Length: 362
Image 1 (tube, rainbow, N blue to C red):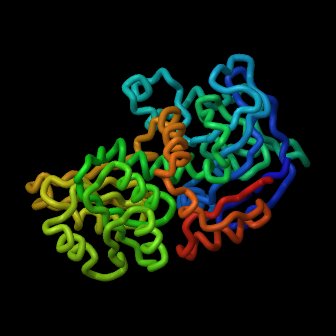
Image 2 (image 1 turned 180 degrees about the vertical axis):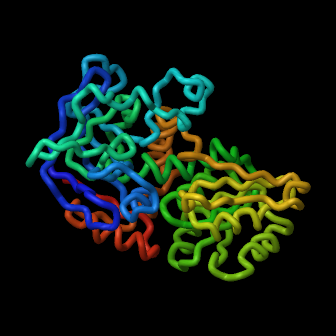
């Protein structure tokens, strides 16, 4: 199969011939139809986060099941599926207490005594699998707990972005923040995750939804998806503007960028008793904090890996939201490109102007 291989950080991905192994007992072989270009991948491509090399990035995908292992019971050949990087074991304390996104997924990867899932066609050397998926490839070989069957009526180029951007942004609203009707919400960053959070806040019945982003076009998209107000995040008094708009601050601030300034802005927009939820991948070593007066005011700060999702339940529900017209994925997707344009797609992401680019394989 053809795949986009990253051999070293800060170098372009190269389209190579890669061999994918046959599925083991609990594994699923998926023909990739579409994969979103996510900033999380960019962190590894640019070396901000470490990963074993060479590897194949890509973790926000949808496709069709081509083959299944002998013990797979959750999907069958021919099923349309969405993959999710938060593969879960189903047995650890996080899984059995309903916090599946925190599962370390140790039993979902092959052991050292087993053959690798991916190897280079030329010399048989190992190609590391990134985030349990490696979706910038024509095929994915994953554990069955890294994918979920969806309604076959769902367009797979839209379904792909459910696996990260939407399940993270919507999960933050529905699970981590638990937004209730009438709550005031500030979304910081209007990329794929942030726009999904805006749309989810509308679905949840938030009373006021304020979208903060330095790019005017993204703020306009946020208004289309349900924001009631927008603020230019690049101005010095952005936090003060949000506080003034809401007459005291918001119940929930959701940071969806991963930049230190956006984490500070999230905290600055809170009312007494408000909660800031950090979704973005901050620079390693960076700390986001609350001041003494924030603590005395009952303000709270939390992280939410993948929005605290329970993806086997959440993704089919999000598909249903889309098919019923409540979830607007079409606005979030800016353009579709072939796999050969993956490096250009990352360049656009570095500029910060685009929303979601989707790689399509057919």
